Length: 250
Image 1 (cartoon, one colour):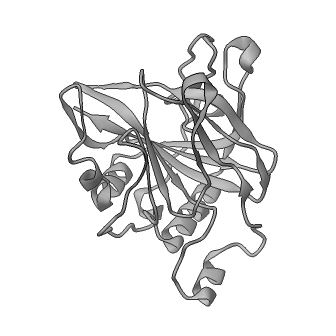
Image 2 (cartoon, one colour):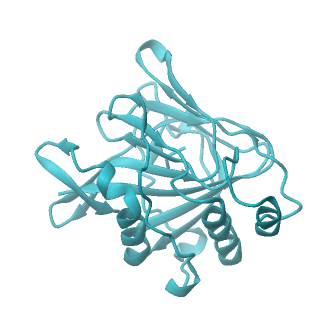
């Protein structure tokens, strides 16, 4: 599901990070439209493969997740596909928004992510923030992203991305808020999400982890030359919304 990908099986790599939307126009939104994200304390980590792959439940609240969805929908998604495995590309069928927003990236990083990466070093480098290139994905019923890997990106000034950040904005709800409040936050026409799991594969295509989208949950995994082959399975019902960025090291 992570965005910068290519298909497995020795196919040629095709960088898809920082790709502009149709017509070469990058979508953007005024800073004031983004929802406020409160700092999170006592975040818990569920390690699925040591520090290479882990989830953080309830990184965003139900209200924050739904607010991001509303803003993304107001900006407008653009469909993104691919030529497919026969052309050396992972199969891809989803809708996408790309914005460059250092303030939003800094807000998410300071809300709790920085503490999670305090002890993680890669090649002598430490995590310093999020890639300001923020992407939002929308998967409707029948859409998916085939097996691929995410590439590490050099963003200049000695900085490079080494982890993918996905935050599921829809999925299983663990919210503890008042039911009537949540009903007001959600679109009444939105069906419960079924499918859309992110699946990671290891040696000989053995399944390492299968992660079902949960509202507000963050998923982080190493990318680049250590990236695990993974896919976003088909959505069979409802809509899957995802916030995507990368963890930058320097």
